Image (cartoon, rainbow, N blue to C red; front, side, top):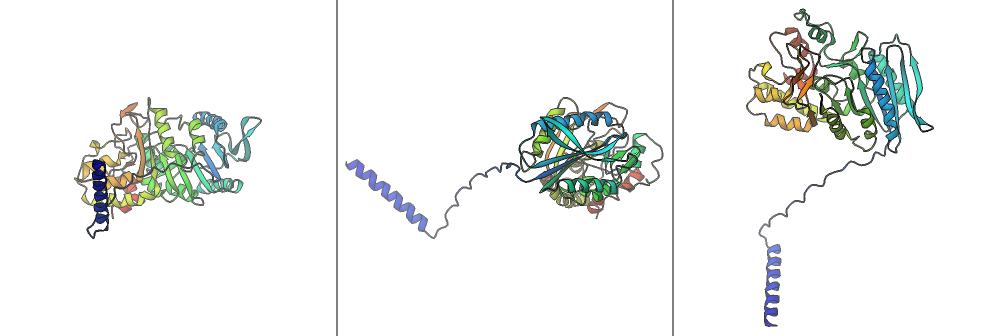
Length: 396
């Protein structure tokens, strides 16, 4: 009994000392912070309309025919929800807008409109009218856009052709405005025109199923067009995105499963060729500010030492982070801005290419975004690059 009382008194003394300490004027150590709770995506409850814009009158029709069947197949695995999916497809021999729907257990397309094949599907007014038609047919709380065609990113279409076909006329500045996406026969849409064409709607996401669209110059132009952009810094194989897997995922959660879609993309191409990134558009302006600070300290470097995403004799697309790391002594501030902007980046160890005399090249690293590095041998290319909004900001 005595030992019990002794223990009890000792315990009371400890409690009293603790109470005195808590009431003391002496500063007390702050409690350890609770670990952050991961915010899991919530089910998509709002209405959502997706437009898939496919331009295949450019040698891609065979691949897009296959992709259209995969898109239809995806409809059998759609989650429950208030959504609608429209497909615009210019095949060359026909141009039409359809809506996907189920009928007697079969995924089908409802014809919305057939267009005259003489219309240029890269004319910004035409693109604007098609997207407005979709919006009138299916107004929703939010919208998504998939763009499938050829792409060259920031590079003017005429200048890109000079590189692709090894023309000797690079000494003259190109007549086209900088940047291109999309091709209908021999016509291309420059990125500023694309921005204008889609300006009537702000998209939750834009997914580029097109080559070289993951460059910082083009994405900077598109920064106010969407919340997020998914794109590849290198060439995209003809099979494109794994639509049968990807389409249902866009309607499962309120974040549209964009990171998971990028992971699925890399899983799909892990034994062949691919690179993809998920970009937060709201962080592109801070990234430009960080790059401007970098350019103020940028030293001379050999562009050939920087990882490239193409096999041209004079590269058009370089890894943005590698460029910064080789050009300045301390890249930590820039790297932080880049981490905020690029939420996911993946790549295979080699990239298949049609841009040079090789079938593939090694891709030892990829931050997810490419950029251009001016080279003395390419004055016309540098002149075009300096006209981009990105260049004007970072060179101020």
